[in-house]
Amino acid sequence: MGLFDTIRQPFLKKKLRKEQLEALNSTLWRAIADGKITDEELGEINGYFYDSELTTEEIQKAQADVFSQLVYQAIADRRVSDEEFRSLEHIADRFSLSDQTRQWMQQQIQYFRVFNHIEAGGDLPSVIPGSVIMQKNEICHLSVPGILYEERVVRSTYQGGSRGVSLRVMKGVSFRVGAHRGQIQSERALVPVSQGVFNVTNQRLVFSGDAKSNSTAYPKLLDFQVYADAIQYSITSRQKPVIVGFPTIENAELSALVISRLLNS
Image 1: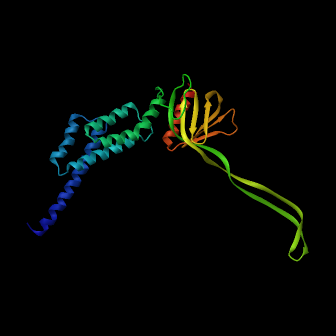
Image 2: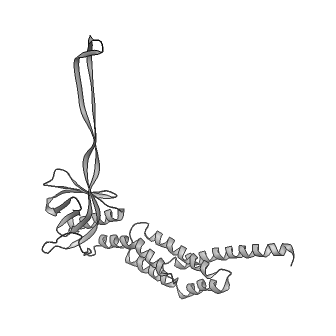
């Protein structure tokens, strides 16, 4: 074997592996296009284990990468239907994906399955409330971490001015004759005042915190507003609104969906 053959063989082998990997990816995407993998399609995929230069690890990684992209496509609209979930489970079974990959999939879609279920008119979940004594016939539908916020003055400054004539009394001492106007300028901001658990039941909204708590029956609600990471609602007996922030936007969205469902039922 000549010098050029020694150099050329690894190069050709590397090129072949690259082409086979690209072909495998095309085969995988073609197989999952309709949400299920037939026996014939599975046989074509398994053929790469025996008839290609690819290692088992490379083929398994390609399957896991394609599956993860499929999961991201499924949650792009922040909703996962039962049909989509069954399709993902079917493909995971056909690819013989690891338990770790399956657990990752469950974590990614869990909130979006609940969102879809609630919006489709399914029963609200029943959960164990956090740090709340339940009343008679009360059912807790949501219990998530939350932070209670209040609007408070965080800084005050004095702004004022005067005009008139300055009269000298003696060296280094003078007084001013004229008008003087000034006012206190206050800067307000939302400040976290208590950390705890936000519970939504069939009768009320309850924030149970380490410094402050709040319980509001639905008939006392005046309005309800939703933000990306918080909710705000006004109460008949309270001048300031209640503002509850959440560590994730999923918790905020789920709270809004459950409360909206209860208020409109």
